[in-house]
View 1 (tube, rainbow, N blue to C red):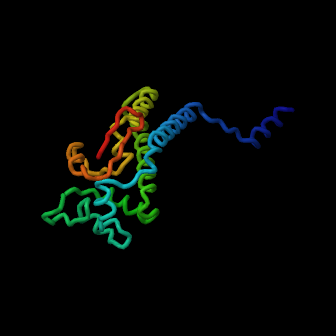
View 2: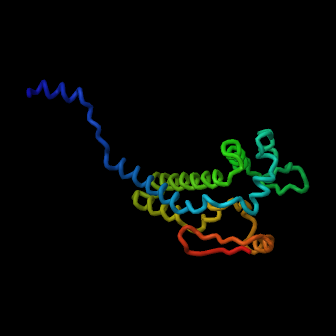
View 3: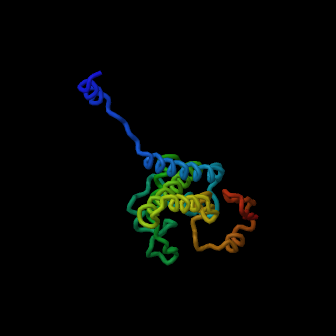
Length: 197
């Protein structure tokens, strides 16, 4: 084959070159997302418990017929911010996600848990991106940081169940729900267990 023939053939068949760095980066993100999903997959069969009843089931702002304006003028529990009985916790983005969950999947807890796991995967990947871009020079350190974040037991309550009131301590939770049916919450790594009766 002549040089002219090789040149024509090279123009006809574009070369796909994938940089090994791009493959390595995509692999790291895929591993993090898969690990998050694996760690919290046991929560998908869970029910809506404790604060979920008031924040989701009994909250008038998340019902399909309610006005979007209410989400931005009411507190987290669906009460007017000016009301004396209002908790004064303003989280419109969270309430908006609940409303979207209900519009797309109804009141089935499975969809709420899937969204929680997906959000945890996304935040974990965002943490790795932020660490790679602004914190560490070595991308391996960013990966290890995000990996620890992904599986750390402190996230169990936030991802696995919708225990949405961060102001309640475990003691208050145990006191308030002493007469409720018991359940056991295991963290994804199996490092600790909380029993509530």
